[in-house]
Structures are given as structure tokens and as C-alpha cells.
Image (cartoon, rainbow, N blue to C red; front, side, top):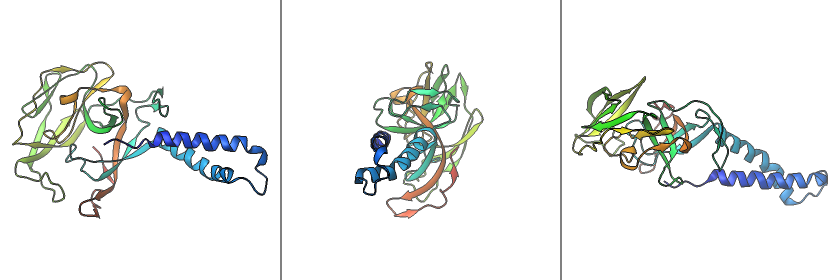
Length: 253
């Protein structure tokens, strides 16, 4: 989904209101200040706080598709920690402070490498230097098969993917045990062994047979990372016009 560039408009708003306030300082005690000064005085602190929080702390996103089922479903509203991978300058996204690096199993939001205007969300499965292979619905990292535990048919009355050929289960990635979904009727998108280059990541959707990910379009550069998803704070089903309260407050693992 192509995003509305709120960050750009916040930066412009902070700059314009700040300039107006700066050049209007001499007239701030007048009884009849111009309307643009009064508006700037009201909106500048609000815009500045929103910009700082959104740029350096966290940002909300909405899940538009089922590529991360069963972990995330269409209609989930999530929060993304933008501080965890370091601080970046608004608009240019140049990193000014190093923090953690992504770990295997992290659910990350990133700018789609083929069109950075689009934000994607996937799970990191391959780190820089890893050899990744996907064969017969099994993920191999550095020659070792990642443990899977399939538990049965996927059953969620709110989700279209419910069918006898969708099997839900778990996969173990390092210290992360996450939910997984496979479609037994879909042919496997097998790959040869792929080496992840420096400062890049191999990502996949948890809905393995219905996800456009690194198997199809390649690696995610480190500079395109937005942050780590950590919480579902709300869910709105646009087709049934209701809130799913069982999704509210769900940790993203």
C-alpha cells in the first residue's frame, strides 16, 4: 500500500509555524495579533511533539493483507518501535544513532526495495552472511532445518483463508517460536541456497504460500528498515464493521 507521506507534511508544518513564530516575536504582546500567528502558536508544539514521537519513538500502521497470517491479520492496527534499530533524520532517513541490529525472528516494517513509497511487513529469517534455503515448505538456515510443529487445520471464523488445506503450526527461529501457516494445495516456492549480503536481510511472510517476500524480489537493505512491530493496539474488520477485541493488546511474536 502506498503511504501518505505524513512525515513530510509534519516537517513542513513544524518549519512553517516555527518560522512564523520566530519572525513574529516582536508582536507577540499585541492585542490583535494576525491570525497566522495565533494558529502557529497553537499548532507548532503539537506538530513538533507528533513529529518527534513518530520519527524517533513509534509509529502506527495498519495491516492491509494476509501475508503474515496467522500472526497478523488484515485489519490489525499495530505499533512499530522506531528507536530499536537506531535514530534516523526525517525525510532523508540518514542514521544518526546506532542501536540494535535486527535479530532472526523479528517482525519488521520496511520500505519495499522496489518502490520505497510502499511499506511492507515481514519476518526476518536471514541475517547478513547467512545461507538461506526454502525447500518443500521447510526453511533452512546455514544448512540446518528450522524446527516446525504443525498443529492442524487453520480455524479463524473471521479470516477468508480458513480451509481444510491451510495448516497452522509453529516454527522455531533462534529463540523465537512463532506461528506459521502453509497451504497444502499450493506448490512450494523452492529456492536454491542464497547467501545474504552484508547490511541486508532475508524476510518472509508467516503465511508462507501467500506472501510476496525475499524469495521473489530479493533482500531488504538495512537502510530501508523502519522499525520492529511489537503490539496490536486495535483491530477493525471493515467488511463486518466491528472491532475484534480478542486482537486488542496482542503482543507480536
